[in-house]
Image (cartoon, rainbow, N blue to C red; front, side):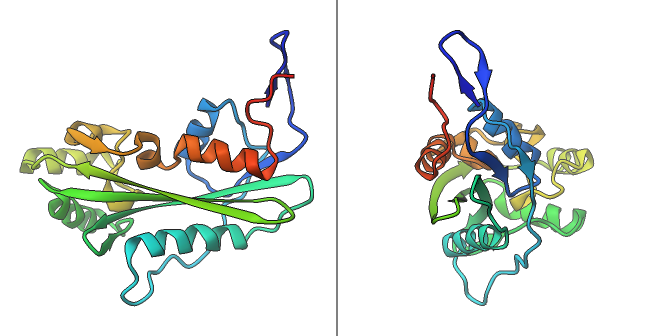
Amino acid sequence: MICLKDGSITASSKKLILGSGSPRRRELLAVLNLFPNDIRAPNIDETPLKAELPRKYCNRIASSKLAALPVADDEIILCADTTVALGRRIVGKPDGIDEARAFLIKLSGRRHKVITSIAVKNSERSWQKDVVSTVQMKRLSSEELEGYLCTGDWQGKAGGYGIQGPAGAFIPWISGSYPAIMGLPLPETAHLLQTAGLQVWKTS
């Protein structure tokens, strides 16, 4: 979307396609006044490779998502992946409440990394960038842990929690990018979309 000098809104000449079904990423794009023309969530195998390190894994998954989506001449596609890393270990999306509990017990009282990789392409080429943040989780009491699990907020979230939800009460300190921890680093996203040809900030 483009804001004209008279305050009216017109459409960009390029269509923005979000290669993710994440409502959080749609909300973060809206902060930039960007609203996808279409949502196309790719279906890929996200199983880590043997001995694969978290940052390499995150970049590979974001790149694989992008490669799985065809792009038209008038389109720009944005894909992303967010990975939680405890040391060299990838802490993925829990399969159920028991695994979510196990993940949170491991993260409780410790610092961990949250990596978000974004990948963008137009019909000519692609670009990619990752952002690494450090997150401190407080030591969780049994009441806090079980209470959070009962909310169901852990479902579909890397590491078994989302900082923008109830688990935000467990995070006293971060170093890095809050929106990247949510799922989309805003400065890097705006830069790559502009590089790919999307008019993000143009005023007339």
